[in-house]
Image (cartoon, rainbow, N blue to C red; front, side, top):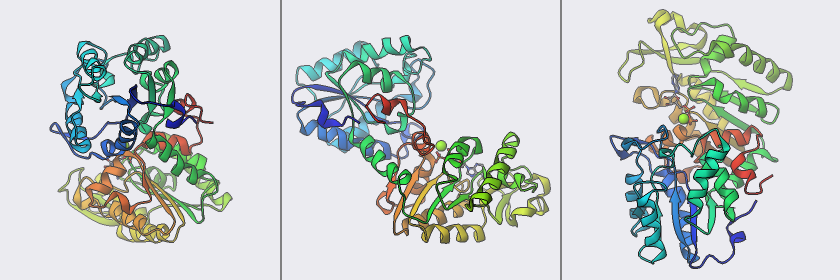
Length: 404
Ligand code: ADP
Ligand code: MG
């Protein structure tokens, strides 16, 4: 894969850098700036090489037209604080404001520009390659070279990820390089025991990774909303908990395959069920096989793994040499249902070998629960991208950079 060095002497040249600055926002404020911080290394390195940078990113899912709630303006402000220098913000992607900002770079008034949300332009995510290429061509006029550093989007075939990389001399940035370095350690010869902990909301998002990793790991710990589809596959009733009925068969097949392979798919033995989906809902601990025997009957909603399960999972994690964790164990956003996620996160910080956290919500969870990034071996900035990488899929945004 081509890295920054392949771009040669960048002194005085302009480089367009695809970052993933898709940070969580609440009431117009950034709630977790982890992705902005993760983008700094490449920007600083390019500045040090004498380059000027035009930063591009998406934020949220606007529908191909300007939408103020998805503006990157706050991100520009935060970037400027973190870089401790002005960042010129363009209020459009390829319009008058963007052209003016890029001119300010040429005339030496600034060395850092952030363009507005790429997804305000329908060309960015268009299914039609000619439309994507047209948008990418406009972006390409702003720079002499392209750096791909938005690890969270390298699994996407989008104008700023794939087409733009083909139009300019292109290379992977430092974030993409370091993410791949760590994820490769999870796929080639991982130290054993190797444990994967999976949670989050949808089982269907995680089936690919279970399928691919089943024969490569020692233990898969199941938590989060997806655990209920597994419990259903075991034949238990799950009340009003999240359930993907169409996936029960697949979960059962995985359970059977695991026992043939001698791999453990660990399911909770106890769960915390609530009367309704709310932070202050009445709740109790029940055996995983008896969810509907709680006082909420068939209305019971499982919102976290129980304490016995949490300590069993924590023990398995602590005694592993390699751990990958994706997906919160419960609805950690509600304090009362965050204990399972906290226990798993805590255990990851105590692993002797390599402990990797992947997934946007999982990364946000560990920070919300008060952990520091450096307590973990690695916190991946890309949820979907890291899962697809671990599924063994080829990622279009890496292929264009020469990755095989
Ligand atoms: P990531 O972004 O780390 O990949 P996901 O997006 O798959 O994680 O899932 C995160 C979400 O899963 C969180 O918002 C959390 O509230 C939710 N979740 C976890 N456990 C449950 C549960 N038992 N019921 C419903 N939602 C859950
Ligand atoms: Mg998520």
